Amino acid sequence: MKTPVLLAAVLLLPASVASVGPGVPLAPITMGPPVQAAVPYRAGVPTAVGQPGARASWQWPLAPRPAVLRGFDPPPKPWLSGHRGVDLATPVAGAGVHAPAAGTVSFVGVVVDRPVITIDHGGGLRSSFEPVESTLPQGAAVAAGQVIGTVLPGHCPASQCLHWGVREGEDYVNPLQFVLDLRPSILLPLAGGP
Image (cartoon, rainbow, N blue to C red; front, side, top):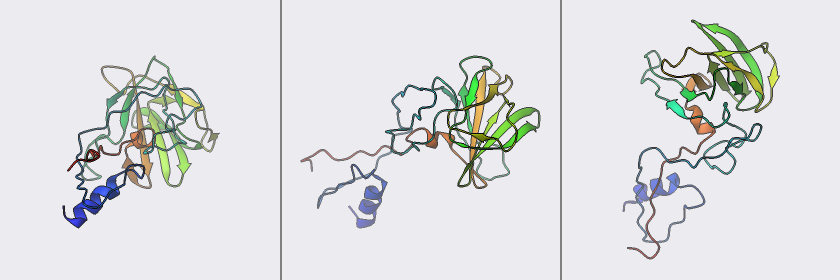
């Protein structure tokens, strides 16, 4: 195997498994989206603990852990249409929305025809939720897990859902990276194999 490919393979591995002996070939193989073990949600307890690719201080904005109805699908150019967040199934109408991490309410109002609340988490990260009715004022401090509002109907045509978007600076990023380990799967050679 060529040295640059071997180096790339080692750099993609989590530190806990990146051990390469001399002459041991490695080839990264991605196999679609990683399968995640279900982690029970407990209000106020981050679900990312023990998941190396997630942030331990972030948690799901709905309880129990919701199904993802529509994933993150950003457009190739910022001005084109796309899905700049994820749609999460809500367990019941009027479900409480929890702050995924501590922060400050930076916006509460209507965008186009939907009520939106945005939380600034610091470090350039902002979460936005819609359609959400909230009584919190702009500037209010929120703790991780605190209820910030309730989901209203109107976003998903076939079912009740919450749209969760995260921006890092001016770029939209996949919100699931903060609560799940989304690193690619990599197969390693068997011990004692060729």
